[in-house]
Length: 195
Image 1 (cartoon, one colour):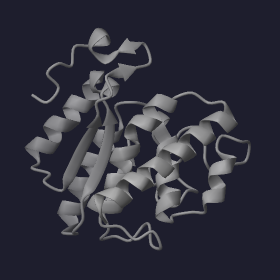
Image 2 (image 1 turned 180 degrees about the horizontal axis):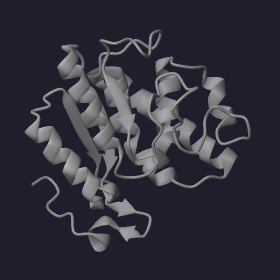
Image 3 (image 1 turned 180 degrees about the vertical axis):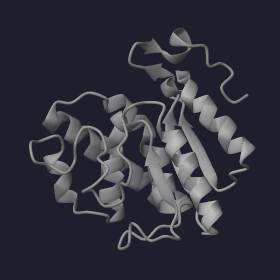
């Protein structure tokens, strides 16, 4: 898929995200929008997946640790064909499968409930280790927020992954420099995060 097509898909994901937030009058629009390009790059370029078989054992897996940014996640899954686009219109409504944080069951392509920050990397590291132990191919991807890097559990999971040489674990950090209580660097010094 060429860059132009990826950019167009990311634009559609952002439009769907804004519409969902407006319809549902829900927060976390910025967190969802800042992840849109990353999600599209993963689901349309980097990950080996099959939307027709979301739980296939050899496909790559994904965890959105920053569950509060799930509007773009849902829009990406719908854009990729995991479920009908019409589901997006039900976001955050009573009885909808699409809650304000990703549920563990009921939404094709989502396997882990997230939203409590700091847990996604631990779950992803465990899943990556299980794959290695079983000799199964495929990678485990996880998207963190820079704000959740305040959590000690993130660093414990990172040390665990390094110690176990989990070369099948891919961690992305949405470094949008904002979190609920202010700028990330004002809350906890993350600079230089790359180091």
